[in-house]
Length: 149
Image 1: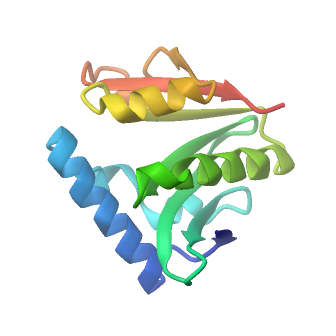
Image 2: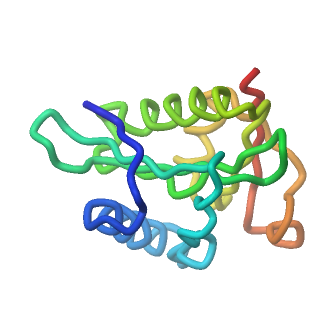
């Protein structure tokens, strides 16, 4: 598997994000599309990445965007095949890139009903924090933080 930084407007990126949106809609009733805009990653300290299989097809994605000088937000995390470790590799890649870009912590949001995502992040060292930003008054949301330095 290889992970590369790409423009989120590429066909492969759009395909992965559409699969993610369909999956989220099935799990939570909301596609999550309103929570991500490609302009969120136009900053030089933001990025969108794709994971590609050995055969060359896209199998996962993720992004980080700027919240403030020390904090980036993990967005659009998706792995086609949950059993192959794609999500873990994408997340680890984003954590490493965040550290290189000077961030000290990562924040993210998912839905409480998305139990697999909640367990995924907790297993990887993320701890729950009070809901931030647009999620502050959303009881269906759960927010996480992880220090990367």
